[in-house]
Length: 115
Length: 114
Image (cartoon, rainbow over all chains, first blue to last red; front, top):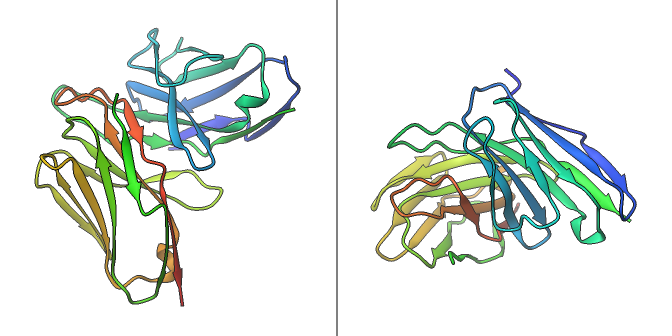
């Protein structure tokens, strides 16, 4: 049971390049999330998904797109990277049943630098 | 808009001492989470507080929730060096709805000195 995994762990991009971050979970969780963490800012929610085939915007969605084609995977895309997107990106997942709330389980993070 | 404020943001304490980290939030919510993050690492869940008056304890850490005051505390008892980390509180955006969308505080960086 690997939990939540993220690929890649590190990446350097030039301004204007595109890339996709992959998140995978093997806990059969319904909900998945993408956050970014910047120094002194805590974590901010980018996009999230409440089930296969669904996505929704979080606090800071601009410049990012996501897809959840399979329940276990959640992809985060940057179509045209900007230096302001230099950050550490965390994926998380949780399992929510009616009337209950579980904690979120986080992946190891992806450190992205945009030059 | 939900705002979550932690204080202090930086805390340096001696081993053996007690201290409390505070987490205030601006709108009604009855679901609050505490996480720990070691440098360069991911976030680890510490506590899930789901109702007013909830209190949970694990080792030297105890967390409580007062939804009427919109306040949670993380109390550290007899600190040891291994507790050095950054601690985040996070609040669910929706009251009673369990939206699963969390707003995080900026974190409290705790350093425990010998």
